[in-house]
Image 1 (spheres, rainbow, N blue to C red):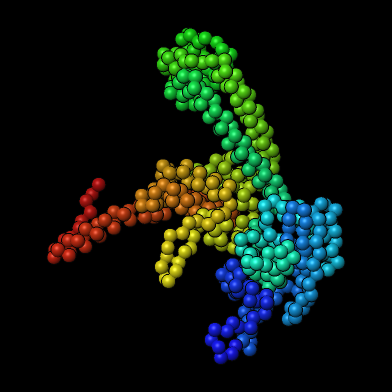
Image 2 (cartoon, rainbow, N blue to C red):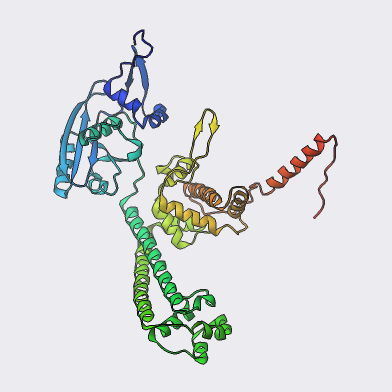
Length: 456
């Protein structure tokens, strides 16, 4: 650098782009682990850690591949070629990488377009799936060739952190569990549509029957769809258990303005509802067969209060069986799930920050576990109520989900089931702070008092 204080340092092209790019903060975070920066004669250089690697820019119809090959201390040779995305063309990509003796390959997680490439190269290459948000290039340099070259350069210097991609059987199980969730949501939508039609027809069954799709509710709905006129004696013979006490009210609730259009619409929704219930039952059978080899791990997850079998399988499908190998610490595990607080600090002041985006399915399941424990007397429920008192219910659910995921990490690391232990979670903290506040106010008035705890 010359005498001009405003003169930019003479970076090489890649190093200058690297430090000016949106991922420069991420790069600085991994300096001690992945690469070294050193300064020589006013020039900042990056140390390479891979002699041969490739970057793939994946699209719907094409894959641009860039191979960087050469000694670590010298500028590598660059080989770039474009391939199609059919199986035959992806096999050509595999052969081309083999010709260059390239085993380490990185690609962006662009929707689902990376999956066909991953399926072909998984058996012969060490694949790394990169978060597209963390490997952005500088604005104005957006071409397919430059994107592939940029990925290869970052991977050569060890600057890309791999995303979690489980094994194929876990990926198949994840497809089943996620599809089951969608079917359950569709089933709920059909139930709500039937309820809406009943309201339109002045049928007030839901006022007296809490579960319209129980045994009694389904029997009454079937009679309504058949167009039968229900008398009090017939209703009494249809309904079960405690609902028999509400037969006079049910007679009034069924006296509405039901038209043929209403019956036909209810029949259409009912037919779809029955189809969805059968489909969900088939999916659950397939899911049970898929987790047969991981029954012990699922039982460990199921031992946590608030987690039933279906939720345990859903959580297992998202995290996989090798949590401690995928995530070195429980903090990284919670961050991947999107349950840790965000960081927003400037000039020594911490500002409000939202939780980061993570695994949506896992986050939803764990928040559901938190709500299930909201009234329980275990330590999870105590933690939920303590946070809710000062932060509100929504933040308490996310904070409790963060506690649960750390418990799951410890359980899967130690291969043990959940054990309820007495851990002081600060239930009496608010009382102690209140007492200290009033004692301080009394001392400021010039008085000294002695506080003795009364017996219960």
